[in-house]
Length: 149
Ligand code: DQA
Image (cartoon, rainbow, N blue to C red; front, side):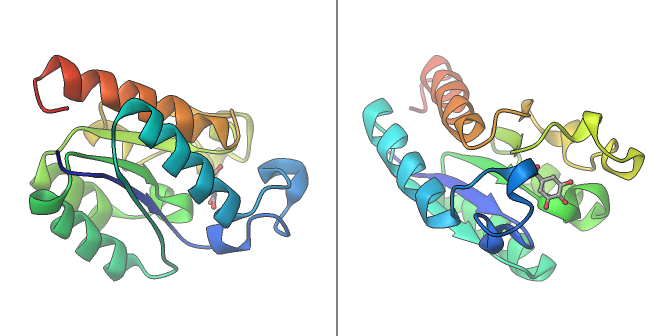
C-alpha cells in the first residue's frame, strides 16, 4: 500500500516558537512523530514534509500522484493565495484532506478563503496537532471504503 503524503507549507518549520498562543507549543518534529504513530496504528506509512517554497509543494503533489495513496495538506499561507496549489491538487485527483492547526474562520478575514477546500474531500481546522490525527483517520476510512487502503 502506498504511503499517505502529509505536506506542510511555509513557516510551519517554526512551530513551537511561532505564535504559540495560536499554534500551540509543539514543534514540527513533534507533529511528524504524532503522524507517524497514528498512521502506523491505522496501518499506513506516512511521508511527512515541510517547505517554505510554493514550487516545491507543487512538485511534491505531482510526485504523490504515483507514490501516495492520498494527501493531507496544510498549505499554511499558500492556502489563501495559491491557485497553483488548487490546480495541482485538482490535477492529481487523489483523496485529499485539508488541515489547519488554528480555526481559520475565527481569525482575520483574509484567512477565511481557501483555494484548497474546493479540491479537498474534507477540511479539519481548529484542533491543533490533533487535527492531523483526525485527518489520518478520515483519509484511512476513505481509502478503506474505496478498496485502496
Ligand atoms: C495555518 C493557518 C494559515 O492561515 C496560516 O497562514 C498558517 C498556518 C494553520 O495551520 O492554522 O501558516 O495553516
